[in-house]
Length: 101
Image 1: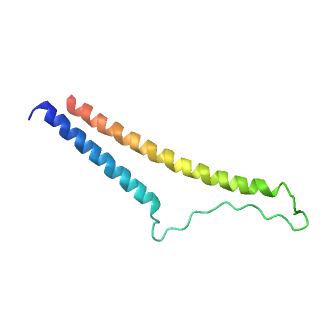
Image 2: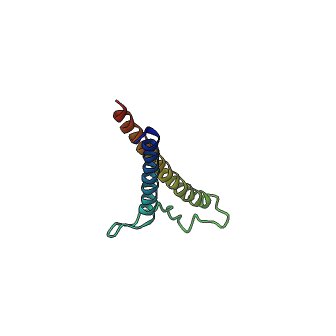
Image 3: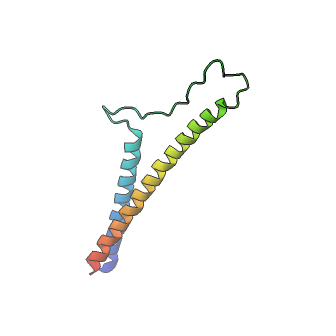
């Protein structure tokens, strides 16, 4: 088998593996784990009724903070997934380097 065929097979298998791993990770993130507890949400402290006023500026930051925490959580999952894919590709290239030696 010549080198072009070997390289073609290696590239096609690598692409298929990356596709399968990324599809599996996206499905694993979407599906709830049976028996696992729901993630805890950060709740804003309840303001006493005497202090709560109609135009209270202190009520808005709690909602803003909750939304910010949810966005940061989504970004963290995306960054973790991206790092996992990068690390997997580094492992593939490391194996190719060892095979070349």
